[in-house]
Image (cartoon, rainbow over all chains, first blue to last red; front, side, top):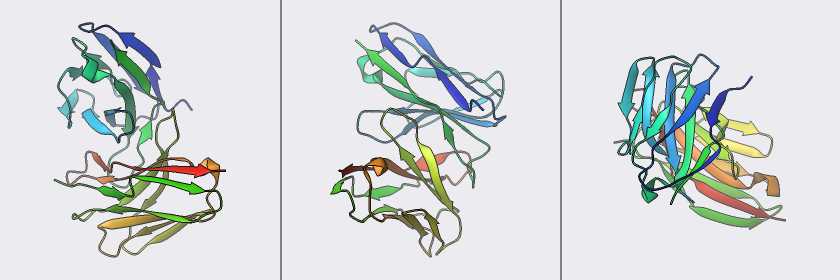
Length: 113
Length: 111
């Protein structure tokens, strides 16, 4: 059971470049999330989705975009990368938020130079 | 806005010692969860507590949910180096769509 799969694992971007972090889950979960975790810190919600075709902003959405065309996939797009976007990004999914487990991917380490 | 606070922020102890970490809020949560994140990995669920006053045990880990469902604690008995990691508490937001995460307690158990 693969769970939540993120790619790439590591990436170095130059300032101003764009990229997409891919995320897919095979648990048929309706809810999907993107978090960032800065060194030594907790998790901050970037965007979330409660189902295909529905997305909404989290705590720190500026500089990012998402789409949810299928239940399985929830890619995160970084436009015009900035050094402040250097972080570890986690994709996650759950069946719901109340009483349900949130399953995380292994993380994507992004450095913007 | 629902917030979860965790204390202490950092904890470094020797193998074999006992410890307790706390998760507190001014808001009532329908449930609270504890996750552990090991270096280089994503968080993994340890436990979910649902009922006020509930106590759950997972080997050397004991979790308690406060009677008023505003706080929770995690007690580790005879800590081992394998317990090292970031401990996060989390609960559902008022809309039931997102998880509210605390900032975490970073535990280091030295051999």
